[in-house]
Image 1 (cartoon, rainbow, N blue to C red):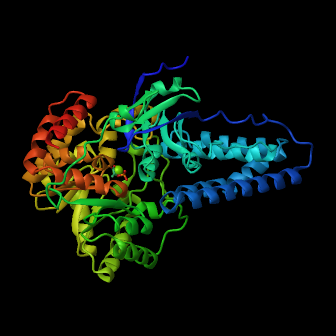
Image 2: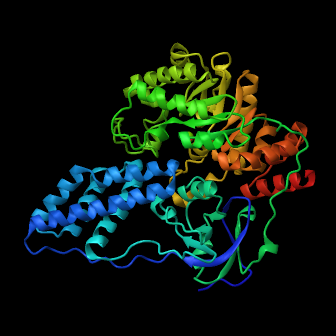
Image 3: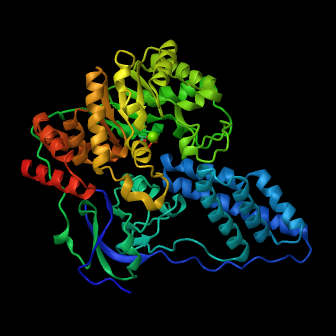
Length: 542
Ligand code: PEP
Ligand code: MG
């Protein structure tokens, strides 16, 4: 079945500009030979397997170089999994039992599935590792694998969702992206936002699109228009600045030295979220206090002027850190992650705060520290005491659980600030796994329940005399940032590519106007209705 010209396929938009291109369906991969036995030469099979693993590892190196510093860590982590000696030894056992090199490696990777069943974070990695095992098998069989994307022309690529290895293959001919699954915090959405490629994710009807059809990817309209042209693009509101400064400060989110340097080229007022765990996703040994102090100092020195909010390590669940020994859990998003690491790794947190203090003194910067995944006032108070005993910091917590949102009044005078992580807050509010490609609609920040929860958080923190900000992906949407200011948040922190757009929006309205817009948002009853009503109100103001 093909989709008629003029059809509107709805999803969730990423970006502010529409783009037209020809549909390119990502092709099913060429067939790789099925399981087979070898002819008896086990040594030759082992050597073949080593060679194929080395080949795929160097392919990951190439992807890491193309991806740039922030995403490079993802490929380095995958390479570690691929080259794991225990995995190789398991494959050798299979070779010795008669299977050929390709089959043996696939069987070895599959055996991990049984061992780690129920460990959601590892299951996510396992999907990538299985993809790599297929590449190993393909190399052995001489089968070419890859997306085979066109290198010239203007194409909108359409697929279920794209893995880190897929997004690194995007060529200059990829002008737009549509995913059938995937959500607003999916890898595809984050990469497209950072590369400024217009995308629509969670677009179920895109399954019907066929190669060669012309489509308009219209992210502001949260839709794909089949046969649409530029005149049908939903215009992003063009905000006309009324003042030089935004009504609340706009900070930048960073995770590496490269990010810090880039953020300093924007008009960001400091850093609202430094995700320290991103430095360690591929470290197999614990970094020493000296090494930590050195990297923190470099990052602090490079950061845009203003305060720098550093988050202590948020390891666990979707962000496994190899050197921290973590228990295998049935449901890691609800398990030991974030501040809960103090159960087994208290000293690492103390070392981190102590190293950061060395870096703070060396850089002369204003540093605020906050802990992720806080659920009770007692945890917040414990973190505040720990942080204050390690350094001269303003101390805060992330609000990512509904439980702590309901306990803010108990924290007056105990902490200095809060920063709302709407990515996780949505996950826990809606009981919708943020890694589950099929639940994108529930993770839409315009969901009225999230907006109303944010209203409660802003007013409760105000009443408790605690300064409040938002650093989740939702704050990267200029219109949503106006709602946040109107709800009473005192700052937002955006993806660095969005700092300019968010600043423009917050410089185009007065605080009174932002409050009026927020009042409209909290009365909406659907996510689409909420967004439409806010955009309508903003358009009238613009
Ligand atoms: C969040 O949860 O919104 C957040 C900013 O933290 P992360 O995305 O790193 O979990
Ligand atoms: Mg979070």
